[in-house]
Image (tube, rainbow, N blue to C red; front, side, top):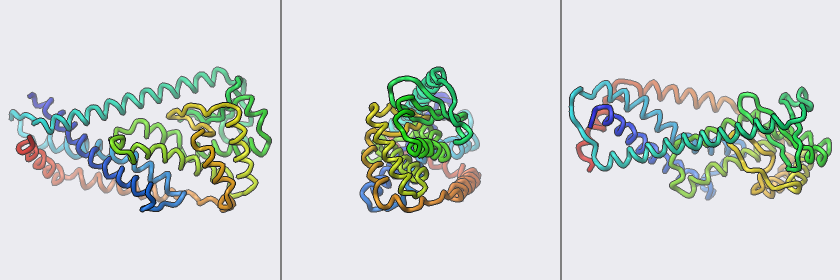
Length: 325
């Protein structure tokens, strides 16, 4: 086996092994959250679920490219013939398939979203009230009910004529505020990142539910920000959801688009909006948590990139090559 091919197999094996371990841990944490053993506030739930979805793949990529490969290049002697056993080859295949499927999902979802947005832009008849919402709002013809925030770099809100005719002024106001809340939370970018995440959460039932639970939590959070803790706005949003749902079935979700309603969440969202808790003021966002996470990542980078870490991982790798079948 050539040195380059051997290094590739080892890199993919490490990626697959780290990913498998972290995906199992994330699925276990998701199971505990789902069973109520770990309780999260409504504000923290989307953040925690997003981290559970993105951490296995991101950490596995980080370990492979920042820890293993530099150590392998630095400490692996030249001209030494080595071969990987069945276990390492199996883990390498697992890592390769995981990466290929993630790239395929990302290309499919990004392409589908781009085609959808281009079609909507071509069909849009004009911009409405852009300055009032800090985002351009476009009217679409047709009978289907569409209220959606689409796009990443230049997000736009699209609405069809039946929706515009059906909603009252208050319902229109809070519906657009819901889509603006998705924009302010960068939910479309998060959807795309989750679609591209090279993780192995799908091997566990609780892991497969993480993305679906995040979508629900993101909708609840956008509802809370749109209603601003006011009962009248909560009632108006619930009414708007019901009206839009009656006009047509829920649209198919796309990676970088946030539809106004999901048929599977309609009853839950309406119940939450009409519950007494809807009168409570929404919790403010806490950007310092993200700064702390970035600081922790920078510290990990500094520690793991040290020669000692490279040498340690190289020694472990050599041991695995010798003793694994």
